Image (cartoon, rainbow, N blue to C red; front, side, top):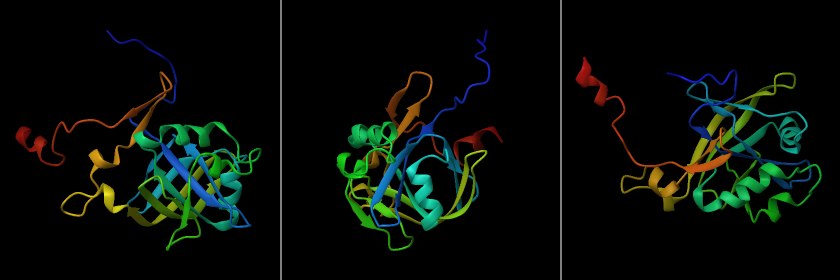
Length: 186
């Protein structure tokens, strides 16, 4: 028997995305965004309220990066989600983050988060909080690459948000092979 919970924003997994921008003076800012995902091959969608400093910044610069929150950076990733850049000017630095300017968009890469999606703004609707970005590049630090030069999730250790318990969980073990295991049922 199932238990009904009503309309809730609960899905698994909910990635922990750290969205980073520069303000008009070139100062980096970041926020934690749990509601988002890939839409098309070159599009990322996020739900971000218009009042966030990060949103104000990306509307000016037309660019942002989306880093994957990681198990080793849970505390700073949570910090940038609970503190407003509108109230704490040096929030990025207080989180212990350091920025390197993306080669592809006018936005910072967070040195402590080894994987990022670098994006240009496509659209933003302040009524629905719906942000669409065009993926220009994906970058990854060599420390999280496997022997074939591809991103290794076991080395990245991305975290997800559990909206039911308000927990962060690390992505776990491999349980199957995509586009292969289902062939057995053909």
